Image (cartoon, rainbow, N blue to C red):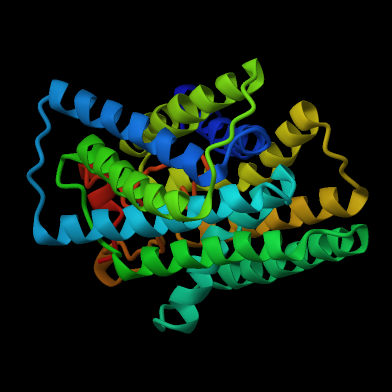
Length: 332
């Protein structure tokens, strides 16, 4: 892994993690679902316009349409919508930690429900993740965390995990940016309908709100999406996914710096353990040269993106483009 790839991985993790803080700023002054619907409308139209400009067209197979619709609803409407609503009462740091458990949830479900094999290091990572989350939640419970808000964050992650498992192996077919834009528009439409029925348009305009809104629209959404797939093309999906272990760290640090959220020793310890669990699970998915006759055998593919679960500013699909490098990393 060269220095450029490391820089791209760090940039992606920073952008992903910062989305929770900017989302917290938005929902403090604007109705969450209306704001998220508008955010997806703008970024979706921008994404589609850029896709047309670089030669991509709306030519999707039935499977690609299915994946696009599932993730447009599950990721953009359910996962991110529930997170935006929850962050009216839940701190950005806690929401970032909950979202960061996405790779652990998908790995566990793949093993428990789909019968996939997982290496001992992966099992250790799952156990570490549970222990880390328990430490954090224990401390937050004592401090009086908002339980309905926490439940919404949990439901959002579970919805995204279920969608990830249901469309495994989907490919963008070369129309990656077009797929991303369509997912955003689907999410925008769903959120707009719910917002119209449940929210009132009441906005307290401020420079912070405007900056946070456009930052969330352009940076964690479009920019992070582009950086992620460029990173995947450069070093492959498995190696790129190891940068997810930085998300809990960056998420709590950014929230502490910009929102002045207080962090205790239990938060620090729990975040470190969760980060180790994510890293262990991702490393356990790395190639293993153990095949007969020198054939390379790979660990079962476990989708991550929940980037892999991206933060509240993202709308990246949970599948990666099938470049020569990613094809070489698929299970044999």
